[in-house]
Length: 97
Image (cartoon, rainbow, N blue to C red; front, side, top):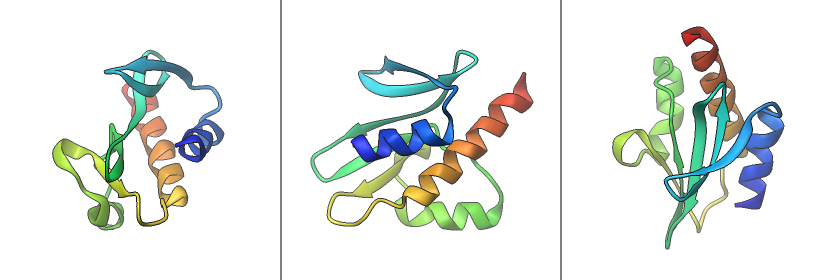
C-alpha cells in the first residue's frame, strides 16, 4: 500500500491527501481523485474513470463493484495502470472546472 500511495503521489504531486470513508484519499480542487483500501485478499482502488474502450479493456481484469478495481494480493499491482488512472482522473476533474 505504501508503493501504491507513492505511485499516486508521483503522478499527482499537487493532490492533497486526506482520509475519506476511512480510506487514504487524494483530492484535487476539493474533488476526490482516487482513494484506496486494503482488504483480506485484495487492495481496492476507487474513483475509477470511464475512459475509452481500450482503457476499459485494461481495467477489466481488475473490475470490482461500483466502478472500483481490485488488485489481488497474490499478484503484482499494475503500478503503470494506476498512474494512468490518476492522470486520466486529473484530466476529468480539470475539465469539469
